[in-house]
Length: 306
Length: 306
Image (cartoon, rainbow over all chains, first blue to last red; front, side, top):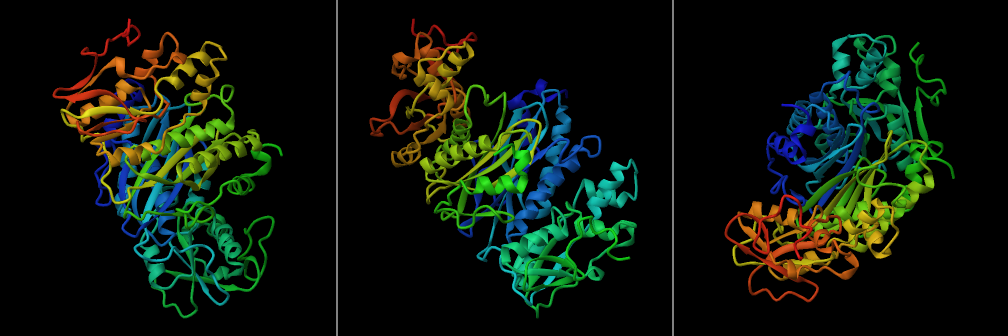
C-alpha cells in the first residue's frame, strides 16, 4: 500500500474515514467543514489531549492499534470522569510522509474500537504532514441531565473509593524500560488501558460528590480533589488493591502510577457502593493527601507497607 | 519570566488560564477532567485542526499573537461555515521546554481575542512538551435550531456568492517568500485572517443551499461543493473581486489562494443578498468547477484575465 506520502492527504483521509463506522450520536460525520454531534442534554462535555511520539508512546514498544486504543481511552475516560456519556471523538493526526499507510489504518482501527467500547464514534478530524507523529484527540460527551461530577465537591466525612486497576500500566512501563517482557498482563496494561467506562454512571447513581480518572497517579490525582474541594484526603494503604502480579514495588506503583485510568471519587458516608468499587480512604478537614496518616515522603512511597 | 521549562507544566497552565476570560457559553472552563460548554440546540458542531511549526506557521514570519489569532480563526470559520454560532475552543499546545513563556502567553492572548471576536471563549486544553511547536485547536458551535449548512445542497440554477477577502493571504505569503515587506496590507492578511463571522447567519437568513469557508483556494473549495452536491459550478472571473493591491497575479491569488477564510456558498436564484456578498457564478448540471466556461488549466490560472 505504501507510505502516506504516496497515498496523499485526500487519499489517506478517504482510507481512514472508511474505517470509521458512524455512531448513533453523530448525525453528520467526516467530510464537511465540521461534524455535528448530538448533545441532548443542552450542554456538551469536551476535553482534549496531545500525544507526541517519544513522550507519550513509542512505536517500538506499542503497535498502532494499541496506540489508537490508548489515545482514545485517555480522552473518553476524562469524559466519563465528569459523569458524562461519551458521544464522539475528533482526531488530529500529524505524521511524516514516510509513515506506512497501513500503520495509520491500524491506528484508526484502534481509535474506532475504543470508541465503540465506550459507546462513541469518531466524528471527524484532520490529517497533516509533520516531522513527528502527533495525535490530538478531543472527546465529547453528554451529561444526560445531571450535574457534572467535578473535583470540587468532596466534603469532610465522605468516603473515598476507586474503581479499576491501579499501578498496572506503570509496572508494565517499568518492565519495558528494564528490557523485560513479562508479566505479559502488566505490559498489556501499559499498552492498552481498560478504563471501566461504567464507573461514571455508577458514581452518579451512588451520589458521588467528586470524581476523576487516575492519569498521573492516585496520590497526585486525589491531590487535585483535595485542592479543589478544600479538604484533606486520608488514604489507608492497606485498603489499596495491590495484586501480587505488581511485584515488590506494587504499592508504590498503585499509589503513584498513572495511565490505568481507574476512577477515583468521594461519596457520602452512607453510600452503598457496588463490589466493583473499593473504599480506600476518607475525606477530612485540612489539605493535601495523607497515606496512613503521613504526608507524602519526598523520596516516594516505596517502603510504605514494610 | 524565563522558559516554559522553568515555569513547569502546572505553572504554565496557571499563567495561560489567567489570560482566558470565561465566556457566557462555558459554564465550566479549564481545571477539571473536561470542560462543559452550552449546546442549547441539542446538537454541537465540532471541528479540529493541527498546526505544525514550519508547515502552518513560521515564528520568523509571524509573532505569537498573530499565530494564536490565525489558529483560532481557521477553526472558528469552519464552525461558521456550518451556519453555526461559535461557542468555545479547546487548545492543545506542544512546545519545547526552551520556548519563552511570554511567547506562549502572547499566543494565548491571540487565541482569546479571536474567540472574543467570534463570540466564543477558550474552554480548556492541554500543554505538553515536544520537539516542535504544535497547536491542536478544536472549535465548538451551536446551530440555534437550524439545519447545518453542508456542502451537498447546491442545486442547478442556484447563484454562487462569496463574502470576504480572496487572495490576500496568498499574496502576502508570496511577498514574504520573496523576501519583500509590502504591501503591508497583504502581509498582515497572511499573518492574521479576518473571517467575516457574520457570514454564517447571513447565509442562513438568505436561504443558502451550501456553504463553506475558503481555506485552500476558491476553485478547489468550490470543487468540494460541486462534488458533494453532484453539480457543476461556473465562475465568471470578471465578477471575482480582485483589488489592485493584489498586483499582477491578483486573479490567480483570488482563484487559488487559501487562508483568507472568506465564505462561499450557493443560494436560490431569487435570493436578495446583502451588498457584503458578491455574486461570482452559478450552479449548473454537470461536475467540477469551470472558470469562464473552461476547465481549470493544469498550469494554474495565471493568465485568465489577459
